[in-house]
Structures are given as C-alpha cells and as structure tokens.
Image (cartoon, rainbow, N blue to C red; front, side, top):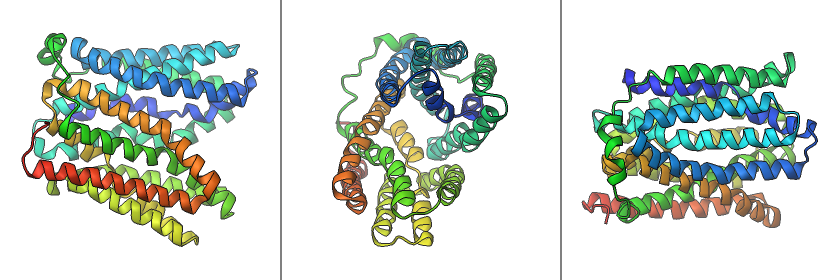
Length: 382
C-alpha cells in the first residue's frame, strides 16, 4: 500500500492550485474575450483525449513512470509559458500544455495503480484510497489560489505552480511502480482489436452515459440554486464545500463496499441514489431538502468500482490502453453533456432537465444491469 500511496501523493502536488480561478481574468487582462476564452477551453477538451491515447500506447512502450514524468514536464512548460505571457499566444500554449499533461497523467496513474495491486479482492478500496490522496488538495485549491492571487498577484500563482511541478518531477523520478520491465518492453507487439467488445464495450457505454450527466449537473444546479431559487452564493459555496469534503471518504468507503458486494452492484447503487436525489430536486425547493439531495448525489462515487472493474475485465497487458480508452469515453460525455442539457434546460426548464438526467441514469442502470448479468453468468469479454 505504501508504494501505491506514494504515486498519488506525488501527483497531488499539482492539485494544490486551481488555474480556473485565475486564467479567465488573466485571459481578459491580456486582451482576450469570452469567445476566445471559450475557444481555448474547447481546444483543451479536444487535446485531452488525444493525449490519453498517446498515454496508453506510450505507457506500453516506455513504461508508466516515464509517461508520468513527461506529463509533469508538460506542466512545468505550461507554467513557464504563463509566467512569460505578454500576449494571448503564450497563454494559449500554456493551456494546451496543461491539457496534454492531464491527458497523459490520467491513464498512466490509473494503470500504475492497477498494476501495483497485489490482492484483487481489495481493488476498489485501493483505487478509492489512491484517488482520495490524488484529489485531496483540490478541496482547498481554489481558496489557496485566490489567496496567493489577491496577496501577491497572479504571476505568483504561476510561479508556485512551476515550483510545485518541479518538486513533483523530482519525486516522480524516484517512483518504483513496479511494472515497466514486465510490460513496457513487449508493448509494441500487442494487439488491441479484441478489447473494445462485449463486457468492456458495455463498460464504455455506461461510463459515457454517466459523464453526460456528471459534466452538466454541477453548473446547472449552481445556476438553478442562485438565479432561480434566489439562494445566496454563500449557501451554494458552503453546500459545495461540504460535498467536496464528503467526496474524500466517499471514495474510500465506496471502494470498500464495492469489494464486499461486487463492483457492478455498487455501480447500480450509484445510479439509483443519484436518480432519487434528482427526483427530490424536482419535487422540493427548500434548502434542507436541496442540501440532503445534493449530498446524497455525492455519497457514492463511481470511480473506485469502475476502475476496479476495468482491472478485472481486462488482461494486465492491456491496462494502459484500456484506461486511456475509458478516459476518452469520459471526455466524450464531458463534451456532449453540457450542450445537450443546456439545450434542454434553456428550452424546457430546470425540472425537465433533472427529469432527462433521471432518464439517462435509467439507461445507465440498464447497461450496468446487462453487464451484471453477463458477469454473473461467467461470460467473458466477447
């Protein structure tokens, strides 16, 4: 477990800062517009899945340790670009480098964790702990980033990011994830044509449906609570902060539960609980009920059982490319979700939007239920 915990701890240094707090204003200060800002963020969403593919294939050839170090190197270059930006082109370059770094890191981190698991009976718990360590600092990141920007200036945020990334790179070079020698040297000889079918295809399908909702729920909920129901930003911020704090133990206990009652059953539970939470939002608008529904929505996390399920469904030699393909399914959901749900909400209202989310969750649960039946009947990835 110490070896598994060291990797997310090293990578968690990048989570101490939130660029989304300062980049929009920084772009405007350099002469940008909302349109340019939207184009840059959209370009990031295109580059990220491409980098995931490179990460999956590159980890097979070079090993996960080198890909992780490469991703941190891209972060260092991004912060250097931000620090020297006197025009928009360096900001754009920095944002593209950040997107590449994020795309490279995700599959390499998850496959490294999967390779390091010695007892698959505790796979989901292990993923829950690793993800909690990796994402832990993001709870305080907006506050810390805002404080540095207010007290010292935005450039000091970029300088802090550069220093943290440099420390992370030095620590990553001492990583012993324990699988490069066993898998990297034979990576180029592998065939992946038989991966995207059967059980794994069902996993990709429910991941896409899940992220259709995940990408759109938070912005829609935020606008609905403040502009439609007229609650304060403080109330919204407090509720979201409590939800973020709940997420850390939630990943761990969801993983522990998943290891006890099987991953597909917990994934079904995620769909049921979130559908019920959305139903409450349709029926009630008082703050206590909204708060309970929002926290219930975040009470079970899909990531630990999903990642553990990937580890079970896929041969070890295909971990790298499998995690990168699942990441692409997530990115596809993230790209389409806000546009689809934004259209529904703007034309038919928020309650209809929540109802459509429940409908998508029903489709998600149907796919998981089919996968559950195949797993229980012993069908392989065919």
